[in-house]
Image 1 (cartoon, helix red, strand yellow):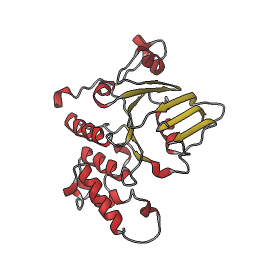
Image 2 (image 1 turned 60 degrees about the vertical axis):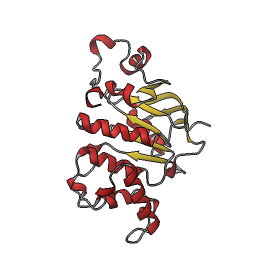
Image 3 (image 1 turned 90 degrees about the horizontal axis):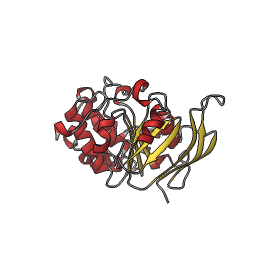
Image 4 (image 1 turned 120 degrees about the vertical axis):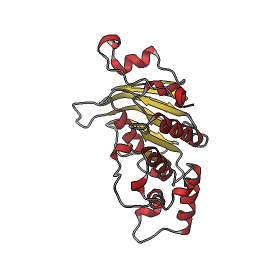
Length: 250
């Protein structure tokens, strides 16, 4: 059984304007997939379908053979750092604990089990000493690691990250992707990025999304991937993403 499967998926926010069409995707367990493509190509829509936040107009989506709208605990999600409120007065430990199922229930405080799980995931992301630190005092890279810890609270089988390295410096990117490689030892990971130069360093495979989807089982940007991303006019009119390398920080 594949960790993630999309079978002939079609989706549009308006039935007359299809965003994703004829999407077939089968991701094996413990894959680390770089999801690339232009803005407006459907990467975020693909993530929302996998998360179960959207229902396809046609086709089916499965996580471990189950409907993601029913088994929301199977998938963890890390939004773009720029979309989080950097000024909210909350401690790091509470941010992480909010990723537990318990946070969705009425009442105050968290159980001992949630507090122990919070300590565990903070240790896994290398932030054990940050539990009582203010969210407002963190750097961009530290916030991303805290959000990954929050997403790991439910022990998901699949972790989705939306542009996790956006607005981070090279050293922070290096630490972030080192962490993702450790997480990937037990968890399947999909990470969207505009930085093609990072793909060979961070991924095991590549999914190119631009209305259609092409999956390549190696961390390579193939000619077919570029064709899916930009169409046939790659050389002159395709605004290719930035080409950063992690080599300088290693």
